[in-house]
Image (cartoon, rainbow, N blue to C red; front, side, top):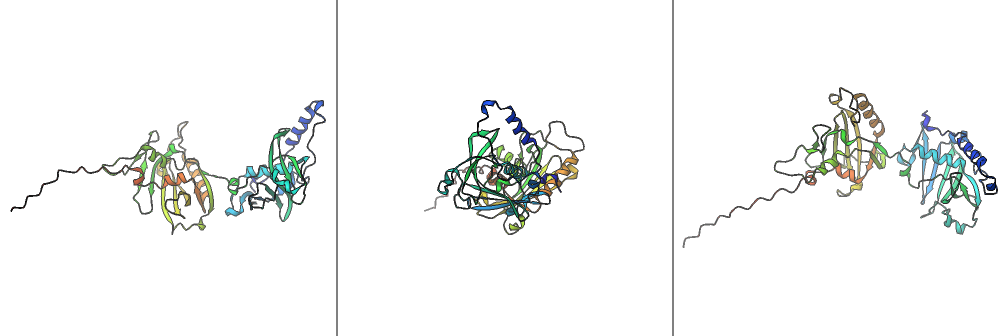
Length: 377
């Protein structure tokens, strides 16, 4: 099992708190201090055994679960979640402590963002942790209290779902209300300085081919520019070359849920100077001018003939042959079977046509009109 799938608690936090208490001046002894933990049974072993959490917020719920040692989002077809965020939520949950009693009047819960999170428009969030079919922790989380800090730890308003008593508590799980904020948004990153050639084939439009002769070239050129035409500006070509630079997702779903054959919207093939080949295939699920309705899949391969024979110079974006092979394999492993929605700006760059890049053709100069012969009378 992947070791990153485990949450390991150590005595560091306890030691730091104990040390802070020991160092506090005697005059501080009467100040309020954190009380009992809300979930005392949630020790290190119990945290490591948690295999599912459910977040309820803004009237809806979603589930993150551990599969084969990795945390994934159930409602996104099992796409990887960000382990660090899951870890932070569970560790904070295990260390959540009572600090000060607050209202027990349900009519006042909304002042602390502690109303029922299943209600429409609710600002509260609920975190429920499971081990198998057993619920091991369940709490409604409200506003953070940034005005008070205890031993460097933030305070937050909470209440248990079946208890009217609300609390100001030590520790804040910092729950994101949207499932997308729990996903690992990074897809891959191909630096612009590596791109040697891009071929974009729109649905029913002519190819757009941009490229550089060598990595040091400042700008891309339009390789198939029609004779007598001018481009609007080098930046349009540069935008195409930048499309894969730090590429992140806005949404994701299993590729089988998108009709890429019936809704084909073109593709773009990126080739690097060091041998990586990435193909993005696009599908349109909305109107042609709606950039938010495009989805894409990715394929990665290696052009063996283009692999570098020598180690790249220090500071270069280019990669050695073995690194490129590993990169291609990693991209394939990460993206296979998934359809991505990325920034509408990147989607637009990948769909540039000649009409987007070129200035309008020059108007033909009107020649001297020939005067017709007068009709003989």
